[in-house]
Length: 261
Image (cartoon, rainbow, N blue to C red; front, side, top):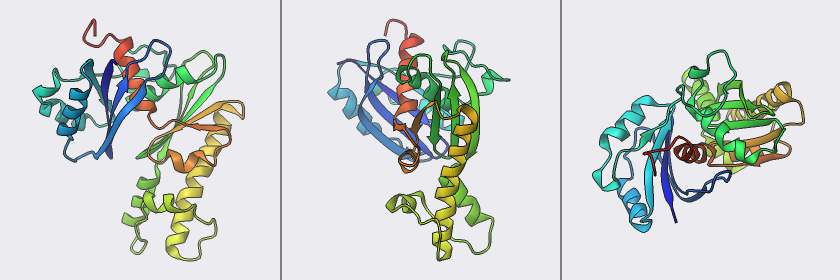
C-alpha cells in the first residue's frame, strides 16, 4: 500500500496522519494519527515506526497556519524519515479557484478543507465547511467548486480563555468539559453559565452564518477539534475529522510532490 505522511501545524496543535494514497477522485484513508501541542515535542519515534511498517512511503507534506511551527519541524526533520516534507502554501500554483478580494491571503488550512470537500460534495451543489479549532471558520465552496470566502470567529477554547483572562473572577472552562455533557442553556452557577454561553453561543453563530451564507440547501461538512461537539446540532451535517490532512495528501498528489512520487 502506498502511503503519505501529512502534517498540519496549527496555532494550538500539530496534527499528523499517515494516509493511504488514493486514486484520483477519492478521499485519502487515514491509517494512523497523532496529535501534539504546537510547542510540544514531535513524536519522531512514532513516525519512524509508521515508516518501517509501510515500506511504500511517499515524501511527506506539511502545511499550516503557524509558520514558526512549520519552520521548526522542517529544521528538526530526522534523516530516518527521508527527505524533509514538501511545504504546501497558498501561492500562484494552488490548484483551486479562489474568488475573494485577496486570494493569496486566505489561510492554507481553510483551503485544505475545501480541496478535500471537492471529493465529498455533490456536483452542482454548494458546500459549507465548519472548522472548529483555535478559530472557528465557516467557509463556502460554490456549485462550480470555487472557494468564495467565509467567516472567522473565536473558537471554543479561545473564547473560554478570553473570558478568563480579561475578567477578574471568571474561571477557565475547558473544551473537554463541554464534551462531557451538553451544557444546559440555563446555567445555574457561574461555571455552568460560561459553559452554556460558550457552547450555545458558538452553535448559534455557526447556524446563523450557514443560513446567511448559503440558505438551507447547502451540504454542511464539520471538522476540527470541536467539530464533534457541534455536528450533532447542525441539521444534516457530516462530520469529517481529517479534512485538512486529507486535503494536504491530495495536494501532494495534484501538485506532483517530488516529481514522480
